Length: 218
Image (tube, rainbow, N blue to C red):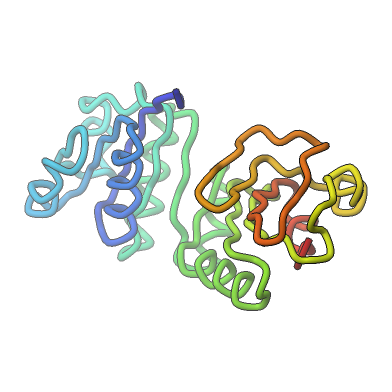
């Protein structure tokens, strides 16, 4: 069973709402915070808890107890100043793992200088992901899970069909690893290097982003 984490998502706009509800759907504990009571009321049945509060108010966030959560995501996107103030407030409170949304490169630079572990640019990441998939007939999906580390889904072609990962020297050739295989309706999360690949198999490939990006086909 996958581990359950506790997330605090500040800002329940389009991005924050989608992120928070998806985390909750995946079985995690999710606290949603927004200054708009109407938006908070709309999320009461969608998250573990939804609270109306000013995220730039340190006393308000302390009273909610956000330091008890594993991760805090600042998803405020319509006001850069509020995003930065909320981010600084969360830092001052002592939250360990903070992600914050950036609206542009300058905003991202400011957040980086503030010491944020992960700066998210939803539009840029979505564009990069779409471009990566659209540019190759073999790549089904591409996700950068953390800075410098990515997972992609690549279809096995006819040239590798009937061969094992050892035979095609996958690790040596691509400097990445296959962490799972989807074959028709069956998934194999633990992959043996001797497993014979079949044309049409979908390989889940993990590794450094710069290496994974180079894998156009297998």
